[in-house]
Length: 366
Image 1 (cartoon, rainbow, N blue to C red):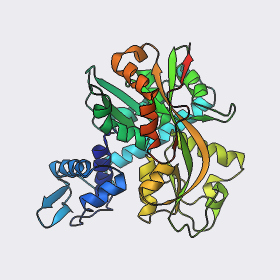
Image 2: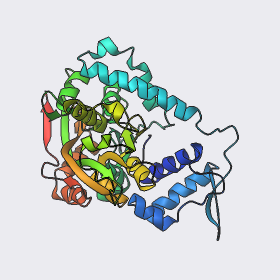
Image 3: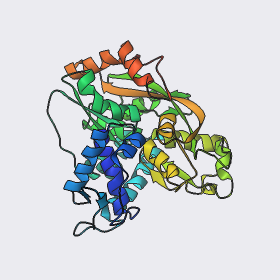
């Protein structure tokens, strides 16, 4: 997904439902108040998203009738080229992940990366910017980063965030290509039992970098509120009839899951829905809340947003990675200083499922 203030995330989610046929012409969208509760945002943010849907001809909004799905725009087809292209790129990302974790250098897999890097160039239209006050953050989806994109002009006047969610590997690759300023990632390395550093050394070799800890996040199983199957562990996903919803290849969540399944000698092919993927934690929670899946792996904050049950499995570290020279750029320097403040820890801790004991801690790669 492309840069996303919250209104853009809502817009993309509803647009996907329209193009895949989950929402049909004539269907009425939830009210603004209901949507703002689901997405943990202001009513104005939802109104902004709905207005964008109207401008794109996807819905109509009439007094007394609410917001209703329109006929698909001319030339559009359900399950069209956008989703077909996304499926192709997911396969390319799987190849990228297998190559990097297999010890291959960037030089050896440059040609193979071509399709994967296209994911972040053509998946959605994105306006490039040279504005000095903008910080581009690309990488793993995070509800707090998403909320921060809306809040930052108030918290740090004169700074704007452009956030693009595509997975942790996506963030590091975008950083390597010079297509972003900071990468958000939570990549767990099984050999060292550590986060991010081993991957950065492979993907960004011989580069002076800084890792700024954003927070530690509670990751675990998200289930329906009632959790009728009593799901508590990854082993429970193999129970008959359990519909699982997964994250895409290249995401930190998927890497952790695949490693844990391997350690436990569990066969992913025996998990119903293992190949069905979504790009963000909130999308995972939404699938479960709307009855299309029984369980998924995601953040506690996403489960809370949709009133779902959560069973914690691990505490993971989410870092913002930046080139050491870029870290001295005024907007980025101000953001880092803010992350080291009590105000930042208070803001992040306001979202359930986050621990801020090391927020603002810097690891330097020289």
